[in-house]
Image (cartoon, rainbow, N blue to C red; front, side, top):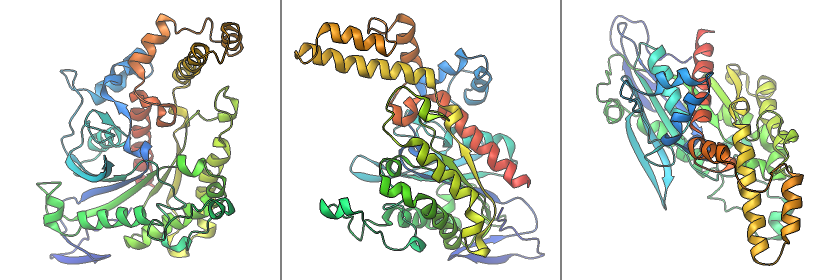
Length: 394
């Protein structure tokens, strides 16, 4: 934990990576958490899926945390967020108290919603979340950290003339760092997000959460370098922010759950291989990182929060719809449709009333976006916050 509020008898000016702020002996600093990644850090879960959290007795109590007494999504009392993302053709910056609307659109959430609610409830200090996330970005290219060196394209990229432009390499890493630094540049910049920010109390860089991976997982060349790139990324972020011990969480890709190889569907993707590279980055970080930047790195697996039964419905809908189109075009016989439906346990190929109801209540996006499940994103966001709080204790 990097506490920039020093116990001194008079005001002192502190400068970290060009960010000037002040601190006093009295009062508690603003807690600053950085959340970054690609589309699943953006977040696809529509608020219409929140009600389904109450269908499961194990998760029903979460509704008391995310909904107010009138049944509306909570707006945090003492936790704020500023968010740089891509919406449409341009980057967008949003800020307010933590609430619904900091996902793909104004009705959706990512991990930040439950993360902010949990922090708001657990901490006496005010909380600021600085979130940067863009869909479809890789660590190998888009978020490439400086110490990883220039991108070395694969033979396939060279042959197909699809080598990334030099300006593309590391572009979103630089955007992320610049947004953090600009937000924390001075008291006035912070007050644009946290209106009552007290410069006399200062702020504390309290943690970083990284949640990304799909684009690297879909590219074997990127998988091979992911562990090393992640280690470089963590140490470079700490160096850029002059925060050598900044608590850092690697959110592990959990699409298909904790045992992707056991799934019946989409088995061609090397999800298990990729997950191993993320765990390996955490396991070997202290061996590979510069001594000054070692320690305080953990992995938090999103796999346990993935909705596997909902995924089964997704694939039944997707596969049978494709087969029906092929039957209509004369590319598949009705007999083959029946045969394939039986082979995958899809019955007659139609969703049952119960399956349709579950889908309508629980899902709002595709498989690779965790099905847009509020139950998934709320539980995972809370798990990230609880892990961060545990790191702070230690």
